[in-house]
Length: 505
Image (cartoon, rainbow, N blue to C red; front, side):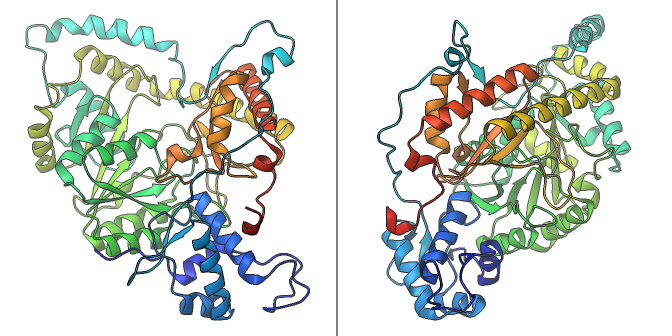
């Protein structure tokens, strides 16, 4: 299969103003702070660390990139040579150079670890876990299980193993989809043990070993592992986090589908985990059109759909723009209500549900009835519960943003792009240097657990990013940010200074 290639125009767009500020705009200027090839190499290297130049993808030809950027071919040759020497490109005889990452640079001479709580004169180290983006259960959870217990006798006369799901829950879910603009019947719903379980069932049916599955980049890490676990290969399409009206590179998705012959994609257009981005209605219509054009099935994960924080109404489901079975939707009660409520669902056609049931019998025999009945009660009372939870998340997000501005003012945080509404449960923070993994390794000594940026990508991308969930109470979030700041300061100056030119390594 042909190697994916980044188009010269796409690379130029992502590079932006790659020349140093004191250049006069003409190649070879003696007033330039450094040679053009070095500035360009730095720009491409940052795209690789940020995940916007996916690993394994080929860069444009020297001729095409030189013409697009308005520089000589010698400049591009020197740029590629420098990247190759430092491990950012791999060349093979007879094929294009592909993007790679060099071995990690050791961070020698780190300062001795100091407990942030000791620094604040507190007696003991308390660990705040920021590796999970999940809230505690709402007060209504106990009532939901009490109501479920009262309704349980109606099911005790059966064997209690229903692989499709109890009718009451499928009816409630069908109503919610219909109210959101996607007419749905109960027999189009398959109840699962969470969205992750639903994705795994779909992968078993819709993929084969070595098949390509498109993913947005960054994305939910457990989805990446599920794709790999069935022997398929995740193909990243970078999200556009800066100076872009949409966030999703729809042209990139279309191109990647055609170049790789991918027949399946996994996307989170409703408050992407970890960035919180929301795809607008026009983008959803185009996404459905791409699925039809490329004959690719798109699995849309709506786990975060109820957690809109900056808009009154979310766009309609992507499947509302489908003309056939090209869009399959998975959802979950875990993010909306409680992670311990292991109830999810798949919304698709009856033909696919029949195939999924054939696979499911080899894995499990159904979702617990009590959990399903509790979910029915929560859905019936969802408006009030979700309004309060959204308000809580807004306050906690504001507290974390304020703490970051005070403690780590040189970090950049993406709440959204191009005016798009944001939501979900986490911030996606960009660090001044690619030290996310080192920071996550150091942070436990200061009382906080972190999920490093590379967890949300493939092959080591996103060393300059960190996911920061705002699902804890405000005092804990402020303390966690102080701990992160102390751990960040403890890294060597070389590690935390802005990226130096390649020639300094």
